[in-house]
Amino acid sequence: MTASQVLAPDRVTGATTVWAAVQQCRARAAAYLQAHACSTEQEHWWRHSRTHHAQSHADHVLYGTWAGVLASVLLGADRSFGAATRQRIHCVLSRFQRPDGTFLMAAVPESQRRGQDIEYFTFHCTNYAVGAARALAVPLRYPLAFLERQLASAADLQAWLARRDWARPWHEGNNIVNLASFYAILAEDGATWAGERLQEMAEWHDAHQHPTTGLWHGRGAGRGWLWHALAGGAHNLHLYYYLGRRVPHGERIIDTCLRLGYPGITSACLDIDMVDILCHLRPLGHRVSEIDFVLTRYLLELLQVQNADGGFCDNYVTPHVLYGHRTPAGVSVTWTTYFRLATIGMIAATFYPEDRAQWTFRNTMGMGYYHPADAHRWLPSHTGRWVMPQLLGPLQVWLSERRRLRWTRQRLTQRIRSWLA
Image 1 (cartoon, rainbow, N blue to C red):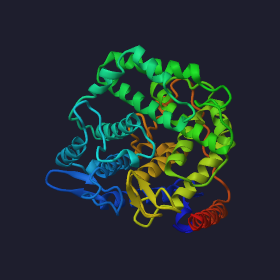
Image 2 (image 1 turned 90 degrees about the horizontal axis):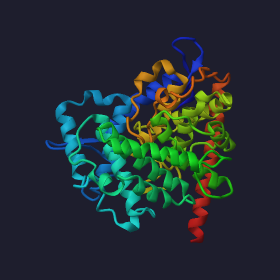
Image 3 (image 1 turned 180 degrees about the vertical axis):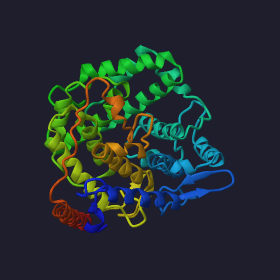
Image 4 (image 1 turned 60 degrees about the horizontal axis):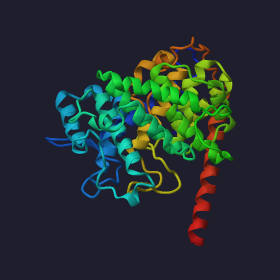
């Protein structure tokens, strides 16, 4: 995308803005989703990427489908889905659900799970598959019975929380948000005990928050450790947003994020984690101009890196490998496209609140959950508007050049490592 495409006249003020580029991004992403959707008489699903063959990597149909559903709902493209299409999507999701209610990519061997234990892997598959079903309002084939069998009592939950290894905050943050999402879903469906466990999780978080960073982690040092703590904390915080509870040490959490400055586009996971925290906590009114500095740069760069097919990739230097499936560097991936769109959507909803209704964020906890009105029931929201940078054109060029140099350096480093190996 060129600078002239990103800089467009604002429909209200006449000033230069990215609003029109966001609309163009949405349209192109919708085209990507349509191109990667596959339909038969019985099933409707999305490919993991354009290099995904459902015969050789059948389990990745689950990954492509939950991402395709959540991205379609986010953009409002699901409004074109009729009852028959929704039923066919339900058939695809049901293929991966087991009688205890969990979802699993069962054909993925342990060696390809990137060090994830079976509980983590199962929770991950289940949260995003159930999130897709809830977003489309289609029923599950089986109820989430596994939770009532394993984690229904207060004692069971406390024992599970005591086993968390906070030397791996990113890993455990995912475990926390997944379990919290299951409790919330059951509570919404009438299980009183699940709502009680959810409140106990929040109270446990109150007692274990790190007073310096405001996050949840063990001891560590360095920029890399701080990133892992932040990535984990972004997940933990969803529990507070969902319950409408005051976030303790919210200003400290903002300070922690801003210590990292603006790092430039990295992985879709890290980018959405940073943006998720800053967009949710911006209403505190703490260091808002610095938050907007970071969010503006994220938005401009994300609009720059959208691929010609309308999708987004996760890695611009090396191939993207997920559970045994390999996608070439720079090629769009469906789950990455959803994460990138959710990141853009959160920033756009922050900067253009009058257009917030065009984004339908997921209604279950997990990446892409963004409901600021619920998250800040505990305080009056900061109402300050985004102050548009005066020099968007030069900033756009600077971000592009900085990114080009960073990726050139990373590619060179990768080649040297390959030669040495």
